[in-house]
Length: 136
Image (cartoon, rainbow, N blue to C red; front, side):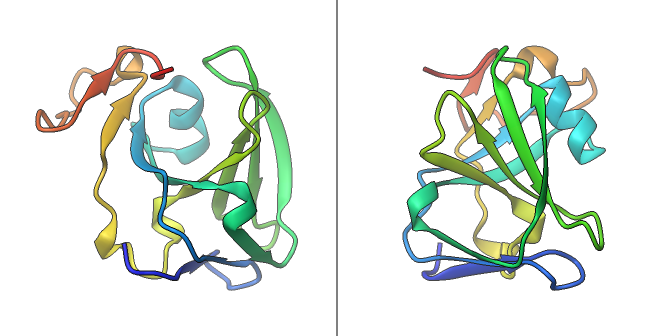
């Protein structure tokens, strides 16, 4: 991924900048990600929270995720774009929704997680690892 990377919500009210390479690029198939993305899975990049600069103030809501832990999701209150997710278990990491990147061409998933919840018609990439739950 080209550094620095940046992204924004659809209306531009919230922008972000990352100066370090992502820790991971994932597809998550858990039910919570399906509901929050409106799609069969959510794709995102995982970064160290301290390496992320955010301008604007996203709204948040917290839900019990498939793992049982609390997940806090951030979105733009003006346009509704989903942007970030943080887990109470690992607050040092933030997941950024892939579609919000200014340059999406560098996104290459490294693994699929919560594949036990994958829709049966989704074609999983057999060249990357799959985890029925989240890898520890």
